[in-house]
Length: 229
Image (cartoon, rainbow, N blue to C red):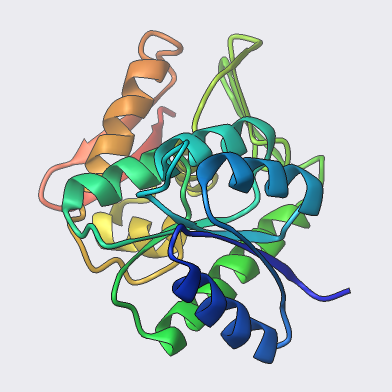
């Protein structure tokens, strides 16, 4: 069975265009035209990736993304006419894996789909035993689970992936652009402040957990997960 894509967009012409294009590339494609139908199709169809518009009737793309993330870590690429940095940051914070602005080039969209699927496949094949542990913290990428002082903590997928990457490369400094490339997996065309937002939220969760490590800002360079010797 081929890779399955769910397209959720209220524009029937765009749905047909995406369906024909990706079917020609060997994917199986289903389409939905509102947010409620999108959630229903996601549960029934169990797609490998979702192409999700923001401006949808009944439930908007933000809510659809939230509900998908409550039940699945499958990749979501948001497609919208909105191009403001705020929309991109919000989409990424809600757990979207990429963000494409209309009008888009089909070849670029196809390349982004393939990149996101490759990255998800690599994560999905991670062993259950691959858990990073430091004092009072455990990070499992396979289970998408963060434990602080032995208790599971709710955390959006991208925050967890960022924390996992930094902790697995502890004491190594990464620039914002490097983190966007390594964690988001594409050449981000917008504002790198999305990394700052994610780090800020991680710090709020990690405050007071341990004095043996910290999420540190290296001024003028970027960030690192510092473990004290």
